[in-house]
Image (tube, protein in one colour):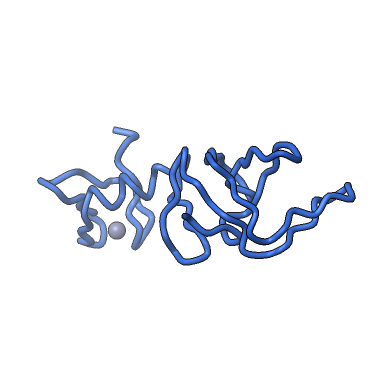
Length: 113
Ligand SMILES: [Zn+2]
């Protein structure tokens, strides 16, 4: 039963599913199983652009500020369009293919178009 998460309240692991909820017998805490599942699904976090809109693979975005590329003299200009992004994990969560090359950018510097 390792798919059942430990209790978020007391961290005990005697939890069990009850309908749509998980139940902790130790502290009587109940919480929705769906929320726990999505919280567990950390491999694909929702990536949001500068306006808080969720981004997806294949979305087109524009840069909302000039970005200097570390370790190079390249500056990606504000307003640069990226036709098709790819979401990846990590600190810089958006893989952008541009004329100047491939760059990993933070979603916070992008706006969906
Ligand atoms: Zn508990």
